[in-house]
Length: 321
Ligand code: NDP
Image (cartoon, rainbow, N blue to C red; front, top):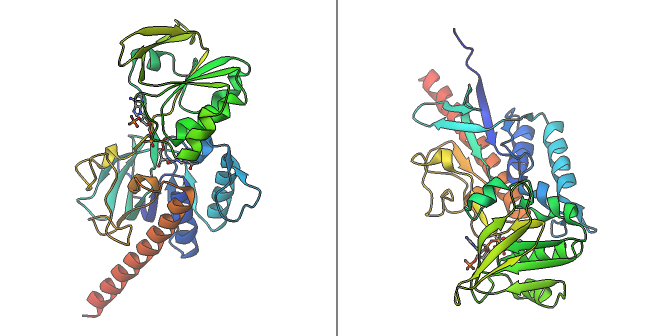
C-alpha cells in the first residue's frame, strides 16, 4: 500500500514550556509547526500547583492553567497539536524520519526535541504493583485523596520538601524518608520541613517494601545504619527522588551526558546533527525552570528558522548555478 509522505518543516516533540514556546515562535515565523505532545501533554507543569516564579503572573498561576494558555497561544498562530508519542527517529536521511506511536511515519526538515524529563521510581515490585492505588509521584495531583490520613514521602531534594510541605496541609501526618543523614534541598526548603510539626523526618532510611495487596496500607522502612526495620501504617506513598530526561529514543543517535541529558552546542540549542535542536529540561540538568525551558524553546525555533532559510538560499543558489 503506498503511503503519502508527510513532510513537516518544523516538527516539535514534547508539549511543555519549551515545546510550546518553540511552537509560538515557529508558527509566527510561518514554519507551520506540528507538535507531537508526548504521553503527558503539558509536561511537568500539569502536576504543579501554583507557579509563582514565572514572570508576568504577579499573583501566580496554576500549572495546568498556564499550560492551557501556552497551548492556546501556540494554536492561535497555527501550530497543529497532535496527541501522540515519538517512538523512533532516523537521522540518516533528510528529511528526518520520525515514527509516531509505533505506527505512523512523518518526515521533518527540522526537529525540535523538547521531551522533558519524567519522575524517577525506586524500582520496588510493590511500588509498581500499587501505582495509582496509593503510590504516586505527584503530591499535588494526588494528595487530595489522602485528606486527614497518614502518608509517606521519599526523597530529600527540593521536590520532596515542597511536596511534604504541601501534603502537611492536607494530611494528618507526613512521614518523610531521607536515605542519608542530610538533605539535598535548599536550606529554606529544609527549614520549612524541619519546622513543620506535621512532618516527621527519618534520616538514613530506605524503603524496604510498600505494604498492601490491593491498596497501600503501610510501608516497611529500614535504617541503613542500624539495619532495624519498622512498619508504619500509611494510605499514600509519594516518591519524589528526581527526574530522568526522556531521551531513550535518541540513544546512539544524539550525544548525551551520563544521566541521559542531550548535549547542545555552546550558546545554542543545536545538537551535532544540523537541523535537530534540543530545548528545555531534556537538555538542561542545571536550571530546569519553566522560564529557562521557554527561553531555550524560543532559541530552538529561531535556530530552526535560520537553518531552513539557509537551506532554501543554498537550494536557490544551486538552481541558478
Ligand atoms: P534532586 O535530584 O535534587 O533530589 C533527589 C533526592 O532524592 C535526593 O535527596 C536524593 O538523595 C534522593 N534519592 C534519589 N534516589 C533515591 C532513591 N533511590 N531512594 C531514596 N532517595 C533517593 O531532585 P528534585 O526533584 O528534588 O529537584 C530537581 C531540581 O529541581 C533541583 O535542582 C531542585 O533544586 C529543583 N526544584 C526547585 C524547586 C523550587 O525551587 N521551588 C522545587 C522543586 C525542584 P541523595 O541526596 O542521597 O542522592
